[in-house]
Image (tube, rainbow, N blue to C red; front, side, top):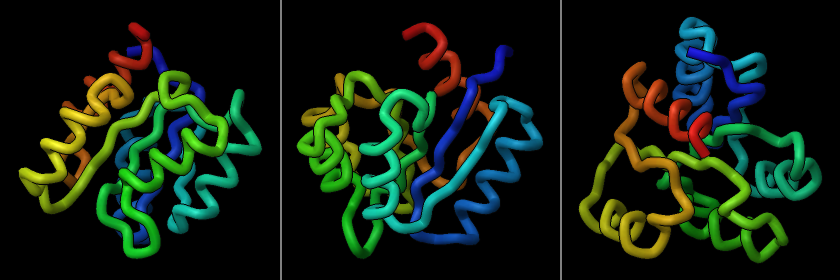
Length: 133
């Protein structure tokens, strides 16, 4: 499998973000892997680094300051078209409500919606979707 240039993990839980980063590093799927635990900082980062921000983003759904859906809305409102960003949402709960919202309102804008923790097969599938886009 070919590597992507950069993967960004946005997750308010630093331990989970770190473990996902380590898994991605062990899988050797990206030249660079970074995580941001504050969704507001992640928004600013993506808005300021549009062209080089990331090839693939793993976005947590449930964050206290701003949930993943609010993040997507603010990202788009801030001038970053979601069609230009490859995003896979991930959550520990897999709430039917979240899944339905992702499938109905954001289906064309997301590369996937998966359960945490990230697993190698989900990561490989997400990367193949980025490469085929």
